[in-house]
Length: 113
Length: 110
Image 1 (cartoon, each protein chain N blue to C red):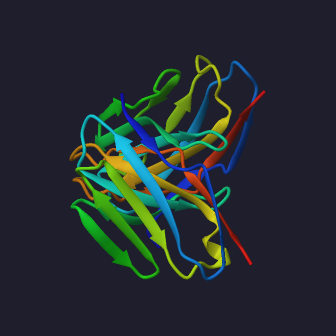
Image 2: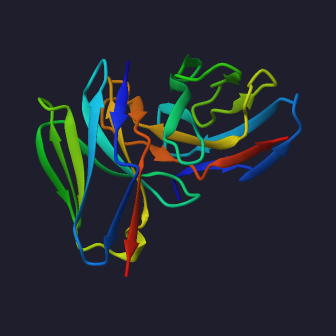
C-alpha cells in the first residue's frame, strides 16, 4: 500500500536535546512538507522540499532543520534552539504543480519537558 | 500579511446541512482546498476549487468566489462520523504550498 509513514507516534525528550522525526513516503511524490500543529490551531509550515537535495524554509523554520537526500525521505530535526517544541508534527507529500492536494502521514506527537 | 478566517465551532444535528465559510487574504492565490481532520488524526483532502463555482463530491460540496475572496464547504445529510475539524487552505502558487486556516470544529449531534 502506498502512503506516508512517520515514526514514532509519540516521542518524549528532555529540554536541551535535539530530536529527529522520521518521514518516509512511497507515493513517488517529488514534494514533501513538514507542519506543526498546536492544540486548537491550524497547520503551520516549517520546511518544504520540491525536489531531492533542495528545501526551503516555511513560516516557522527557526529552531528546526531538515535534509532531503532521498526522494522517499524527509527527516525533521527539532533542535534545542526551538523555544517551544512540544507539538503535533505532520509530514505531507504531493505531486508537483497546483492541485491543492497533499497526503499526510499519521503524525508524531512530541513532548519536551 | 496573509490570513484565512473560519468560524471556530459549528454545531448541527444528524441529517442536517451545514456550511463552513472561509474568507482569505493572501499575497498569491491559485485555489482553495478543504481538509478534514478527526481528533488526533491526519488531515485528509476533501476538495479543491481552482475556478469560481461549485464542486460536488458526494455529500460534500465546495464553492469559491475569487472576487469576494470567499469560499465555503457544504456538508449534506450529516452523519455522526462527520464530527471533525475542517480546514480551508489557500494554494498560493504553483509549488503546491498551502496556507491553512485555523480550522472549524464541527460537532454533529444525534
